[in-house]
Image (tube, rainbow, N blue to C red; front, side, top):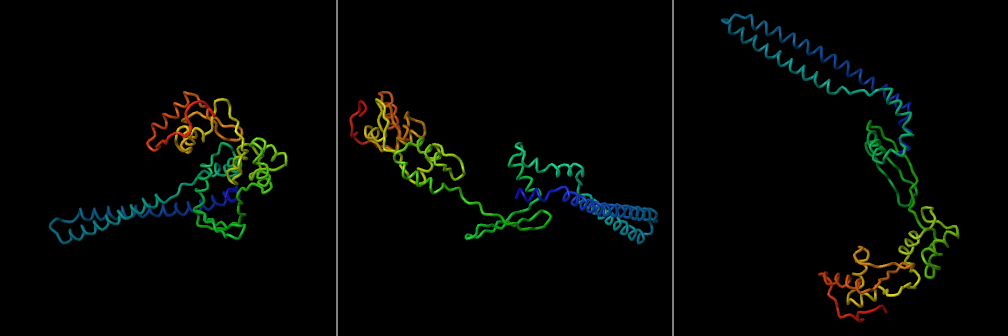
Amino acid sequence: MAALLLSTLTLEQISLALDAAEQVQQRHTRAHRAAELAVQHAQYEADRAERAFGQVEPENRLVARTLESRWEAKLAALADAQAALATARDRRPPLPDRDSLERLAADLPRLWDHPATSAKDRKRLLRTVISDVTILSEQDSDEIRIGVRWHTGATEEITATRRKPDRTPAAAVELARRLGGVLTDEQLAETLNAQGLRTGKGHRFDVKAVRWIRHVFKIRAPRTQCLRDGEITIKQAAARLGINGDAIYNWIWLGQVPARRDPSGRWCIPWTTDIEAIYRKKVAESVHLKPSTPLIPTGGAV
């Protein structure tokens, strides 16, 4: 749509549009002048009818009523002429400054691509000249047809290639499946990059991209735990508290309880007396949890 707009709003097209606008303005000017003359004529006729009514003898009632009716008719005609003049003035379109528009058309491509031009500004410009857009697509085709209707009433149709979704290359997925269970996220990213593989968007792999592959293709990380002294797993903490581990995962994601993530992406909890008190307070404050008897006694890490 941007390419269509920029190819349409050229200096030559702007000049043609301004020439047409000037012709329209001239027609409105002629209509405006005709309406002004009609008002002047109606005013003259109304004034003449008023003078005739004012000169009639009061005793001549029949003539007076006739002249009064004629005067009222002329006043009604004057009101109609004035209304027509007001309508002609309202319909007269303001013509933009020709030099400013021509300079804008010559500079439009640079303005469109300028970093300071926001997406909102571009959409407003499109809506200024385009009435609506209709997209026609077929499932078995790589092309889509785009129907465009301009505010002038003109229509046209353009064909574009359907944008394919960003997909991780099959070779990267296959390598991640083979090595994902033994390599950490950092190591797997380095291996994928060393093989010259890239993400679906053509970027180098990083930890975030590797974790996305693990999530989408259900590739588990190495089954290793890098527990430090005094740390326990979520499963162990859940057993000590007598609750389900899902609640602990939720607290950790919300940042409500302390925890640390090891290189493989698993959570480790430093199980000190103070931290255990934080977890037990969360359990006590919950209206949904009903702790069962802890399977493992409280105390040091196991």
